[in-house]
Image 1 (spheres, rainbow, N blue to C red):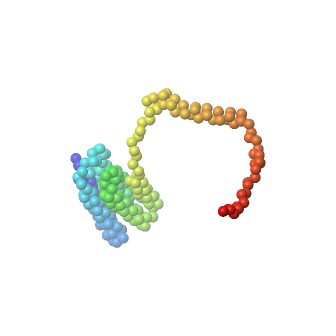
Image 2 (cartoon, rainbow, N blue to C red):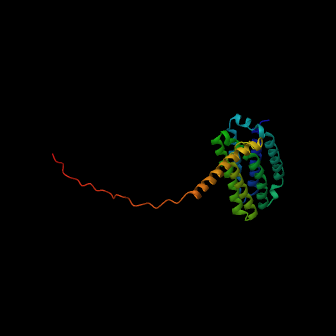
Image 3 (cartoon, helix red, strand yellow):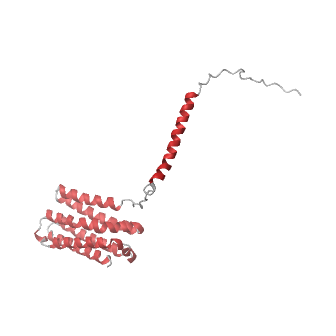
Length: 234
């Protein structure tokens, strides 16, 4: 089963979640408008992934099972968070938002960004910017309204982890050392130059000890001779 459709449905469901939060706080323009913009963030993210060619989703074959599990987990969180939103205080709404965004960002979006980085540089950058801006927007809202250091720190940790792991350099293949296969022969080869260098140092030390001190340099027998220029007789 292709991952494109499940990811799109997840983004659409998350967008509806933010629309419900905007309706919950209609009396507060700042909070209402921020929730509305966050719903639009999800729509932009969905449009960015929709623009990708089908070949990209085929390259995710190895990660398909783990991504499907992460998407199902996010769906369960959304189903729980949709219930009784009208009765929740603002602090609990922030808490549910972070509980939802953490698995979506780190378990669904992050693998997509890492795969995009492999062969799709520009789409990877576009999608990364959209996700980064969305999390940053959540952090600003929580910081300016909630006043809860724990929530602020949690949102900051989410953004930092996403930035760090999405921009981490690729790890090359591990080369198995030949020491495991032929430890004795390789050890002897490695030790031979070391023994030679030790022998050379010993010989040099012996030569230095046996060498006699050089006599002081004597003065030259002849001083520099200055040849006077004379006229040439014709």
